[in-house]
Image (cartoon, rainbow, N blue to C red; front, side):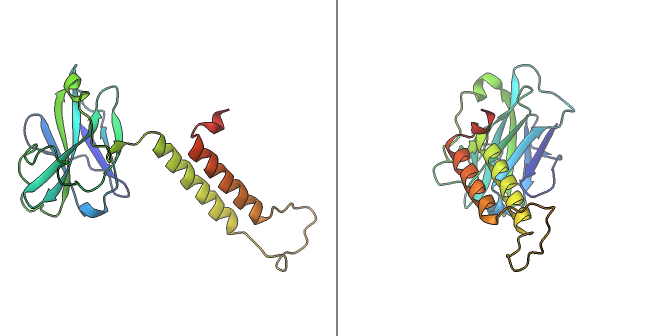
Length: 196
C-alpha cells in the first residue's frame, strides 16, 4: 500500500507492520538523509475519511524521537519532505510507533499511521521540516540549468583553438554564463516568471 524513497536510494515498498494501523520503513545511514518521498503504491486506497500521517523517527539516547511531517491521502497520493535531524524538544513522542526495531539503533525510520483525515489536517509539522512544493520545482530547474551549462561549457574553446568554419555560429561562453545567472536570479524572485 505504501512506498518510500530516500533521495539517491532505491524504492522501498515493504514496511514493517507495527499494528493494524501503523507501518514503519527503516532507513539506513540516518545522518545522510535529506529528502524523503512517501507515496501510495496504488494497490489499496485509504477507506473514506482516512489518510496516512507521516512521521520521521530519528534515534536518540531515549529510543526514537518522532516528528510529524505531513500526510498522504487518496487525493494526495504522494509527498516530498525535506527533513533534518530531530532537534531536542521537537519530537512528537518517543513512543508513537513503539520502541526501536531491534538491531536498528543506527537507523532512522519513516512511520505511517492510518488516522482520520480531519484530525491529521489539524496538525502542523515543525517549521524546519516542510513539504516540498515550489522549492522542488526550483531545485529541478536549477539542476537542469546547471546540467545544460556544464554540457555547453564542455565544448568551450579558446580563440587559439578555434578552426575557422564559415557555416557555423559560435556563442561566447560568457554570454551563456550571463543568461544562466539572470535566469537563476529571476527564478529566485518569482518561480513562475517563465509562464508570462
